[in-house]
Length: 452
Image (cartoon, rainbow, N blue to C red):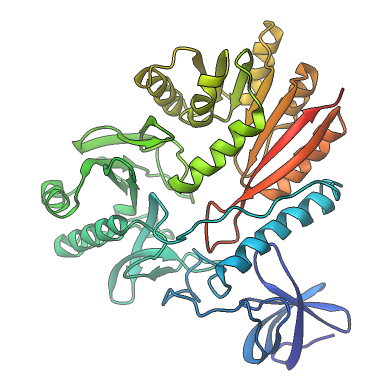
């Protein structure tokens, strides 16, 4: 048994799915943040629990050839990226292994073909959306990112994975807060006005939306803030006040007030134009989104005569990508605002064979099936919690010839695939895509075929 504050030499023999190195002493697992498999490190035990311990690196005895110096000055404190101490090629291999391990351990799928992770040529400044929490620091208001496993705000002058205009907008809003002495939100007391600064940037259109999340439906001297933003943010198309007085971790509230410009902005993907609202979901990495969605459409093997369901469709991106190759597309999404955007996107792009329904997929799809409306091919792109079991049961009864599963969580993906493979479907292949370089997250596209 190891003891707290004990110092020992440790060989790193594996990695957790969160990117921590794993070593063992007398069979007892020790997790080490920032260690890479194959390394030998001197560590200090900082926490001992019943089944494992946590340690920090004190010295390197043998470094991995896959180690590199992090390029972010606040990397060790910020919780945004966790893999900058690895070479980019190593992060891609790590993410593929995470998928393989989850499929085998949770899904009992040890013989599925998992391709190498598709990465980016230049994995920096790739995010079109930023979310900066605002709070009080030791010397006044601060905006930045939450520290790892806490709600302490780490100030970052710039972030190498964000669009540069996002950092600039954050700095302007923070300057406005300081100049006018506007109270910032206190999570403990619930007092204060400004909670977050959220930015959305259309990479291909240049349009910028800036969202100020506040507890009240008005901002003091908002015209001063808008003046600065209009002057210093090229492409500024929309400034939104989002009202969220509720305690908790949910960033955006339900009410949006347009302070300047339009209610939405636009961006283009794969030759299609998409309308982006404050509340609608839109993939944060546009370059890799095209890679991801093109792979999804390829896996669908559409011939032009199919009815296609696009479930958890957001603003309709995957379904509209597929519409030109299908007879009909039916999208389902729980956020009404996103459904309206999907309908608008279809109309704006001249797509007449797509329709969209607002509601929970696990409720809408069974209703459609009872009415005799069924899919030949189904796309599912659920949130991290995966698909609802009632939806999966309906898909099994509907028996589409193919399902294309787009996943942002390998563990819930593996769980859902286990259900489907036990109910008449077969997993043909899995393609990991690096949507979030330098983080531990990995996106996957899975081709699933109904067994004959």
